[in-house]
Length: 108
Image (cartoon, rainbow, N blue to C red; front, side, top):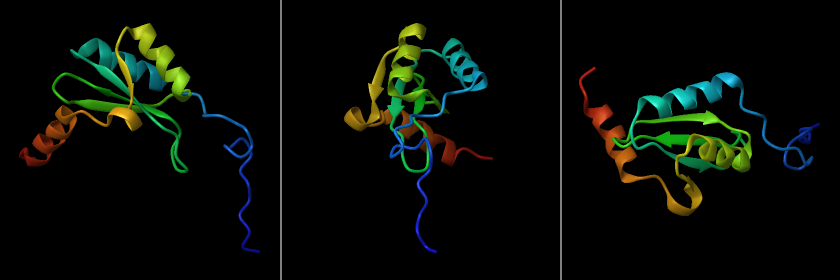
């Protein structure tokens, strides 16, 4: 009665990440086109979320969207000619934390 069911298509089933939809990719492309110094950071799949890519601009502004796994993120970054990093290896840049702090302190 209390057994957990295996999800079909999950990591145990050999399936991969759910593909990003066109809206996700368009949002990421628009972010890159409208900001300077954008870098991409691959965020690994978890039990709750699919693989995501976080884009961080020169001033720390950021956005995150689902992507077609780590290789999909690398292909996207290569296509857009921006650097890409694995967040598990390098962490998040200080400028992103500074941006989040500025946003918290800004008057509503």
